[in-house]
Image 1 (cartoon, one colour):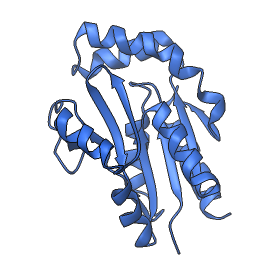
Image 2 (image 1 turned 90 degrees about the horizontal axis):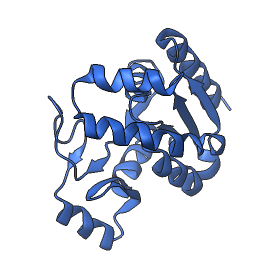
Image 3 (image 1 turned 90 degrees about the vertical axis):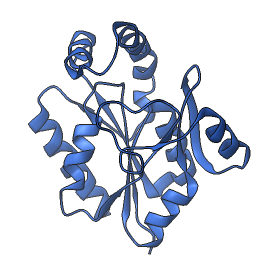
Image 4 (image 1 turned 120 degrees about the vertical axis):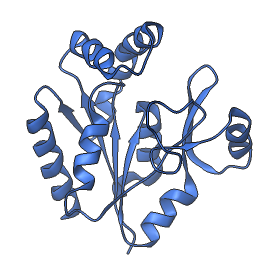
Length: 188
């Protein structure tokens, strides 16, 4: 039996990665779908664990070969995508797949897998809180932070296309809500 899919999408800085990491530690038979990207590594990120880091040329070649379930040029020259072989490898083992993807990618995965997938949008409580979280990461320049804050309003418009919206105001509450949501979907 193929596993179910759990898609977590959000504006950068909303806390989706923290929520996904927490869920992976629970007994939910989850395996993380590692996304591919053409951006540079941040901090201590590891190729094949955090992302598959590809050159822009390699990424474009995989697009041409139809190797992606979904992909997006999130910022000019900066691609993110989900490799089809990664998702099928996990599902064929009978494991549930969990994704940490951008908003457009999340919608595309949901459209492809329909009722086998649950799409969750993680939302920060406010734009100001989003800015604070991005600055506290200490991984991005002010220019990058400004671009991400500007993109927030665009991404927020997609929230209604997701099956569930979790507002990450208090992390403990958001973690608990995410756990309950996944358990309910698994048991359907």
